[in-house]
Image 1 (cartoon, rainbow, N blue to C red):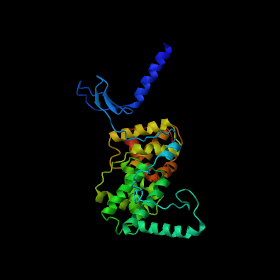
Image 2: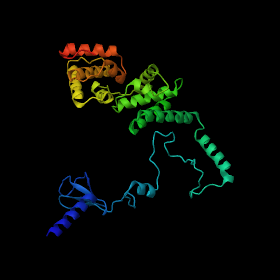
Image 3: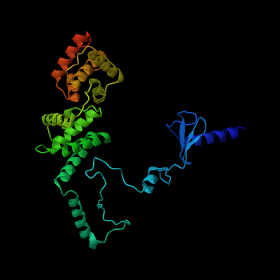
Image 4: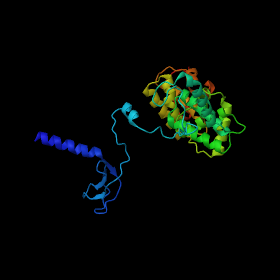
Amino acid sequence: MGQESLSEQSVKHANTLRAIQVKEICPNCGVLETVRDVPRGEIICTNCGLVLDAHLIDYGPEWRAFTKQERDKQKRVGDPPSLTRFDKGLSTDIDWRNRDARNKSIAPSRLAEIYRLRKWHQRSRVRINKSRNLVSALAELTRITSQLNLPYSVKASAAHLYRRALELRLIRGRSIEGIVTACVYAACRIRNIPLTMQQIARHCHIDRKELGQSSRFLVRTLDLRIPVSQASDYIPQFSEALKLDNRVIRRALQIIDDARSKLISTGKAPTGIAASCLYIACILEGVTRTQREIAKVSGITEVTIRNRYKEIIDQLGITLQYPQN
């Protein structure tokens, strides 16, 4: 009996793995509980057992792979189209390795010919100004996102914004680096990644003033809806750089919520509010962090921290038991 029950469980488990739940109303019983049986190519109602559709086409591969190496070896297609490449990855390319289609070394007598073909092939791909601009911009975008360790979603969003700006001819009279950096900053804001202008400009060839001008121009001309950043978004980043524990982080988030409820943070930079609340939380929790250390991490001045934290403790009625550093 134990073996039979075990086999029944394994069969049920196999049926569960090969059945995919789909949202389709059964015409017989009217229940929205149907599954797609992939091996049989059928859609079955789980309530009455009626076969709603049969002989479905399986668009999956006909081969099986259990590791990434086997999957890469057996697939017969390339990478999906990507906005981060100027040709979206759809054009052909002559590989830099001097090997033929059979992975054999090319004869030395033909190396000069292959070199000329590779050179003219590269020139033909970027024969117009728009393509050359896009190649240079996407190379700069790859460099910035790599140095900032940003995810692929931010890189793709920034590439999409730059392509829109290029189609509208907004690049004329402006530097490529400025527009690319502004696209990266806008993509970070859209994806809710807390990065300040100082942090992005530190890895670019432009200053913060030019980045601010390019960002405002990009938002205005492309009619972007940039979400407003909150002070609580910067707390994990600052606390990690200052090596603060969870109790200080919880106290800082609580102070930010109290300041927001009393409209203290309205109209003020979120980085200044976050740094000031972290400084207050460190004093309340008995953790030694100076204003200079917090200012260096947050990218603001010590004067801003002093002004903000005095406003917060006065309006929230917080009593500091430790001397100010």
